[in-house]
Image (cartoon, rainbow, N blue to C red; front, side, top):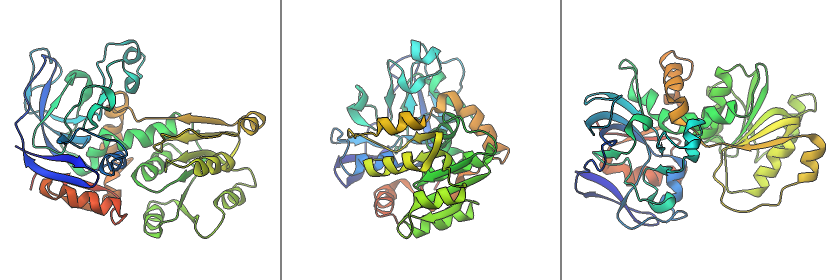
Length: 348
């Protein structure tokens, strides 16, 4: 079969590899019908996260079950499924508490040895799925892949950014970063009753997409975003601020400045560095900073239902569709900000 393999920074190759086989009775083999390039994949592409050369990349996908182990009880061959990008065993203390991203046996597709065992990713014609009964979610047949594929990862991240922040009906939500995660966070905020979603970025094309979704756009390259948000909220600041950029202490500090007293900053951007945080100011204003990783195992069925009912339409942020052999080009487009969301269509 064909798969996309990583050999170093900016070096992806489509090659013939052996087909995966069941390793345990709890495994399934899934044939992807659609996958998506995620912002976290860019960290692999750029070499920020280093893999073993030859690793198969990709973690956001859905498809059809081709084979199941003897221990798989909830799924059968032919089922149409979304596969959580995060893998959990469903049994440990964290899983029993519905904290699947912190599972004692956690792993993620296509991220090499980041979590121990190197697990081949989703940009392949067949994928082995461990703990299939826990990791997979059956989805409606009448909803197209384009609307559902992001339930694997990006949409749960946007969902958890809002829900974990405790957003209430009528709140003003500011989103810093209008990439896929930021835009999906805003869409979830709309669906759950935000009175206003304020979208902040420096890329004009992304701000145009935000406006098309009904958000109020602020170009942070032209005006002071913190002051503008305060002006829109009678001087208070936003009730919830979603930080969806990552890798920047300055942006995190600005998010803290932007939120009102006793408000919540919800961080879903990718951060690896250590920062100095204004703890004294946070204490005096009783602001809260939380961090979230989207949990498709916990919320996949709920989110697929919201998509099926038209409450949220993630396909609105898709800008490019590529075939498997064009995945390296898709990464180039995404890395150069020529694409907002790239999906991989395995159906030809």
